[in-house]
Length: 134
Ligand code: THU
Image (cartoon, rainbow, N blue to C red; front, side, top):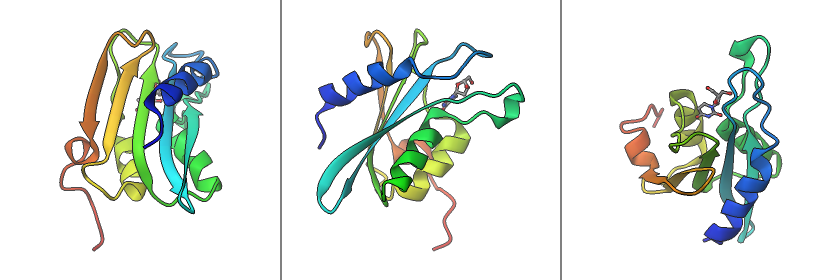
């Protein structure tokens, strides 16, 4: 699995690119996936809009980047924000994540910016009994 320390550094580096002038809540996500056996990480930040409902969450930003790179399956998801406590993915993002995270035991790690707090979960815990056409 990708080096956790490296991913945390990547999250910190990208968090400042969050476009969040309306809420002030900066969020960055990283998705870990592999292409032809080589592990890769894509980052995404929340992108707010003056028409608030058009805001794109960090998780969905990261997923769009990864899909553009050819990602088909997410192995791990990381979320960092500038809030005192780690934030966990919103309901809409949980549904979008499940499109690409097939393993219910796949790890989800949420941390705050100072890394003083973290919250570990799994896809299965975040979205049990998910909607599926199978
Ligand atoms: N946000 C995310 O980026 N991901 C989530 O899972 C929850 C919320 C963003 C959206 C908005 O820009 C800000 O956090 C406050 O809701």
